[in-house]
Amino acid sequence: MKHFKFFCTANKSYKNTIDETAKICSYLSVMYEYYLNPVKTGGISTLIIYFGDKKPENIVVFPIMSHFISVDWSKIEAFSSLEKANFILEQCNEVISFYVHREQWDNKPFQLVYKKVKKNNYQFREHFKKPILSPNKEFKAQIYFELDYEKNGTFVDFTDKSGNLINRIQFTPSGYSVISKTIGNIEWLDNNQVKIGNIQVPKLGINADCNRKKYWLVKMDG
Image 1 (spheres, rainbow, N blue to C red):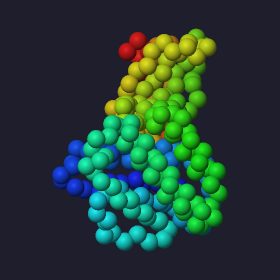
Image 2 (cartoon, helix red, strand yellow):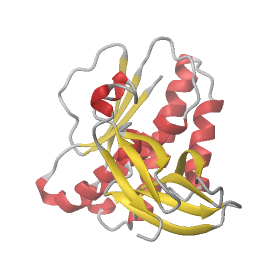
Image 3 (cartoon, rainbow, N blue to C red):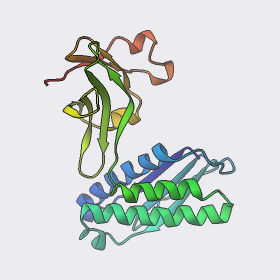
């Protein structure tokens, strides 16, 4: 299994609640895709879980598996963002556990993700790729991203050579830039500035001509 999609069905009476819950569903499903180790699921590529008060009419066929969870939006409306995240995660874990048992999949990879999300307090915040040493070997630069109910963005973490943070500079508005594979390699231009590739067509690789034309310039001092 490679893909998880957690969705909310529409209801105009609870638009704000559903909009917030949908965002939480979106980043939690991305967390499952990001953290899940390879696991054999009998050819099933995607698990879609819908939350709502009315079951969608769309037809899903192999290799996609779907499941509907009935919710009372009037109750969800009173939840904090953290409580919404906890509710979604617990419900999704129950559904995944059901299919793991029914289809005889290996449960360990799924439970590792579930426990990691809980341990991280539902926050999706990670460093991406290895830190790169500056020309004078005094500093390091590394991509850091946030994508959760509280924060969202992609940054460069500038540290000293021991890894102590000097400055964190944001250069895209969403942490999804990492997930969508638009962030290329970091290259130091001098001892204060880095160049980061802006990947236009990820499937062509970072060295393709179209992926070498655009980039971000980020300075350690902002």
